Image (tube, rainbow, N blue to C red; front, side, top):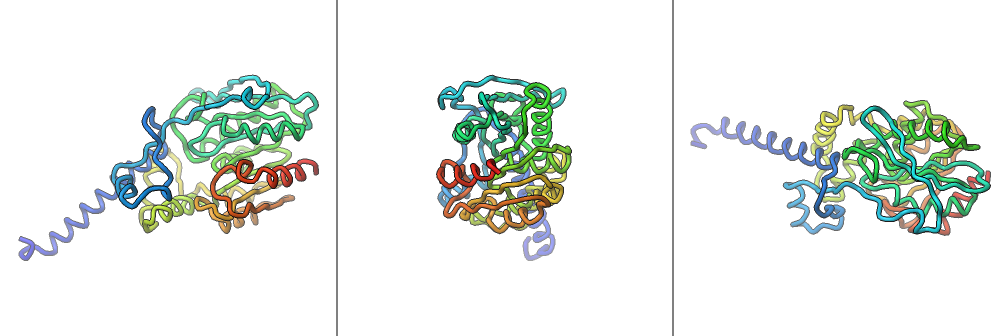
Length: 318
C-alpha cells in the first residue's frame, strides 16, 4: 500500500504529526495556565532525566495551586489581612505589615506558581529598612480566588486594584512596587496599560518577551524551540483570551518613567541576562541595574542577602 500511494501516506503522516503536536501543545498550555487541585508539582526541566523529560513532554506538567505555608508572624511581624475586588469575578487577599514610622509603602507581588508567603523574607528586610509592606496573592494563588494564571497579563489588573485599594484605605506617604519574575512583568504592564503611577519600582528576574521565556523553557528541556514555542503561545492565547505574542515587558518598559531598580541573576535560564538588559534599556527615567553573579531564577535576597540589602537599601535611601 505504501508503494501504491506513497504521496498519500506521507501527507497523512504529516497531518497526523500536526494534529498530535497541536494536541500536546494545547495540553501543555492549559496545564501551565490552570493550577491543579492535587498531586506533586513537576520538577524544573533542568532537574529531570532524559526519560522524565520525554514522559513530561507527552503527559504534561502538573502545577498544584500555590498556597501560603507561612505568615508574617513566623518572621516576628504583626500584620492585617485585607481582601479587595479586582472585578465581579476576582477577589484578592493581601497582608498589610505596618511600620510605626513608615517612609512609604512597598506593594509586593510574587512570581509564577507562587504565593505571597514566598515574599516574607524580603518583607522582613523592607520592614527593617523602615517601610510598611503590602503582600498580594495574585488571582489563582494563595487565598485569592480562581485557579488560573496569565503569566502577568491579567495580573496587571491585580496590581492596579491593589494600588487603588491602598491609596483609599491606607493612604501611604509613597508607593513603591516590588515584583519578582511574573510579578515584575505585571507591574510593568500595569504602569504601561493601567496608568499606575508609583514613586518607584523594584523588579527581579523579568523576561523580555513571551516568546523568549517560552523558548528558554524548551532550551532547558533540551528540545528545539521552534515550532513548539509558537504553538504553545498560540494555544495559550486562545485559552486565556489575549494575544501572547504581544505580551512583552520590553514594550511595557518604554512607558515606565518613574525610578527603576532592576535586579537580575547572571545564571538565569528562564530570563537571560541579555534579555533583561534589553528591557532595562527601554526605561525612560532614572534607573539602576544590579547583577547577581552565579544566581539563577530564584529569590535574590535568599541567594545573596548582603548584596540585596546593600543595593536595595541604597536606592531606597535616595
